[in-house]
Amino acid sequence: MTCNSFEEITTSTPNKSLLVKLNKHAGRNNSWRITVRHQWWWSSKKYRLVDFFFLDKKWIEAKVETIEYDPYRTAWISLICYKDWERRYIIAHQNMKVWDVIITDENAPLKEGNRMLISNIPVWMKVFNLELVVGSWASSVRSAWSSATIVSQEWEYTQVKMPSWEIRLVNKKCYATLWTVSNPDNNQILIWKAWRSRHMGIRPTVRWKAMNPVDHPHWGWEGRSPIWMKAPKTPWWALALWVKTRSRKKTTSKWILRTREWKLMK
Image (cartoon, rainbow, N blue to C red):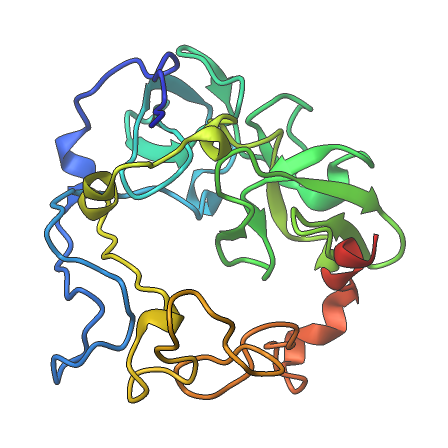
């Protein structure tokens, strides 16, 4: 079993005004039927209100006060204080330190942590907290050690290479934050113990071949014998592997220049 050293963390006490208690339903709906499997309700943790909008704080400098752990995220978060004395949580970048000064502006300086229009970011720069819809919120590239790359600034849109190697067109009026997300060692962690997964809100997963015929198409053959099918199936008899799940009718497909399957072909 391995865990983080938490060397970058500066405090273990969160800001109480930015904490919210979430009601947990363990993946069940209003009829108390399980709609999302392998979720558990026991682990109690409070949600940190992280700011993903930024637009109401344009042209106001902010100073980093702390770098903290967030139980709901793989990345570290930092508490920042604006010049008008309002405090907010944001996702910390990889080299963020206490007393750093950051700003959100249309043409902010090219400094790590600054947020600006994607049209003003040079080619091959790394960004995160990417906004895909103009005037909305940072909806993409937010997990630990992830970053997108500016590929081209041609014409009306910016070409962005996502962490999945998908190349996407983004409107030049969208905003993004410079550099990469914090906690680069997150993918090296080994859970190892079952109780640690339960503490994270994850219930045990049983092998499909070990189930009964009524519960799964693979059902209980002797030992670890094959499933005796041409292709693996889900519990609802749908193909489980090598199948595209994205709807062809999805309107956002026109903004994708190159799909993520290109990475598999390489």
